[in-house]
Length: 254
Image 1 (cartoon, helix red, strand yellow):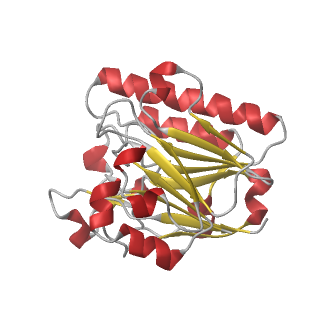
Image 2 (cartoon, one colour):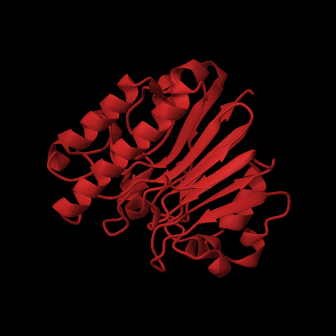
């Protein structure tokens, strides 16, 4: 089973850059998109009704902002939008899709760079998500989490750690939360297989950083450690263009 995740930075813009052709070629079992920046009715028809897939959207109330979409070949047992907490759910950041063997979270985590209020919101969102996932794990469910976490975990996960130590996305408090997440029994699937540097999933467009691979790894797949034996591969598709992010993925046996 192949699951791909991509922050497309606008599904309509990404579609103009070849998203649909790439999707057809890859033909994943599940595709999770973040930051779609569109209401369902604004999504191009060929994506809204992709042949062979069931698609679920969770769009933000604010137009042109945030939003996630999950495409699945098989009909899920259940799909839930958000955590049931209004201040988070209005931003359309979460789709929770249940399959027989695991529950998949497709999440566009908040960015904390704007001001202290948004950083606090991001950290509160992190904690709310962790509590929600832990409750499901305590019920015996397996958890797969993918999306744009908006935080690079370790120095190896960005090009210029020293210069960014006081920037949201690499603040000690944000990185410490990922440590806590891992301590709760979740595994960074990519780092389980790949310990190499220069493995990034986001590059600043304004400085043409991608050409120089001056990037950040902020897009992840995490699974609970009990399910990790089912994960056979984890990867970053750095050559795929169409957004300031590139897709990431895992292959699992279920």
